[in-house]
Image 1 (cartoon, rainbow, N blue to C red):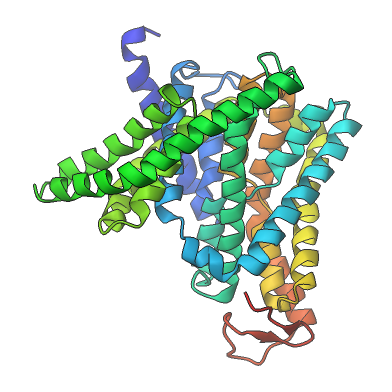
Image 2 (cartoon, rainbow, N blue to C red):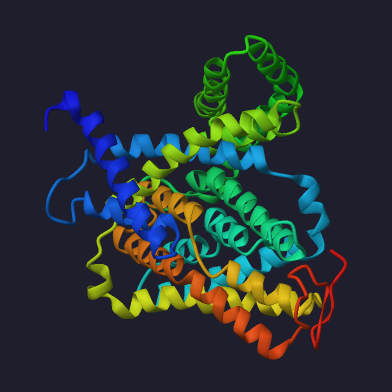
Length: 416
């Protein structure tokens, strides 16, 4: 392929096939993410036919990660998190620990080293916000207690992943070797200091400058300039965080979104960034699919099954146990458990970074991608199973909405 048209061909192939497979997935009542990933598999090097530019696609995907993290920051609500903190914070941390431990055990059983096995488990421990929000929207539960707890839970998981994305490059040397403890301590300390300076400057200086900039742009009454300004802020601050302060692109974009979140024009910025975020996020999922070797399902069926059981059973049972411990009513418990029975975008980001650093093999990444594809595909059926079990164990009078606070036999809901 001539280099001059590689960008155009990659964009056309990625967007067109993502649209086609996304529509097919939607008609089958699956998450469009399944279609985007399958589109990537089709244009990847492991399937016959056209192969997209394998060097250009990851760079486009990086833009998708930046805009995804910018969107997470724009929509992050400390107020909503505080309302459910008594369940969401300890619950998410405990569930991450359980899933990581299960993944480590499976990894060791498959012959992985401790570090790679831990990364396998940690990658599987976080659920997809995109998949969760789509499921809650279809069930009209976003504004209910179920939605608040589930979204708060995933906010905590997202924050943990953001921290991990900052720390992982410090803890792993090129080639996947662990850093010397003394060197590691100095590196972490120095990086945390630079990150703290960056975050401080963003909230103190950026918190005044960025809203003023947005207001000035808004006064032009130009939708194009406002959209371009939001994009420039997201990408520009992400680059400054990486080039000047040694942080990741993802962290810089997240903090930029967080700063704009509380501004008067923050909602408008989110609306302008949404189409761009969605478009480049699609390219991110397509590029992840390009890295997936589908023959892993045939070559390692038991390993894929083990990964899928951790996601579907291990995480769900951990969530049920934790919510029951906090005496959350059964309806909320079963729905939250079903919400977590999948993995998504942050799993891909963490796995891709681990492979880049040499801390994870392509084979392990394929296992994770196989588990992600299958878990996202079956997640709607997990919700139906959870509803059926909930109805059997916790019958409610007809007409009672999802926002009910008391379930028969489940105890009163915890004050969250």
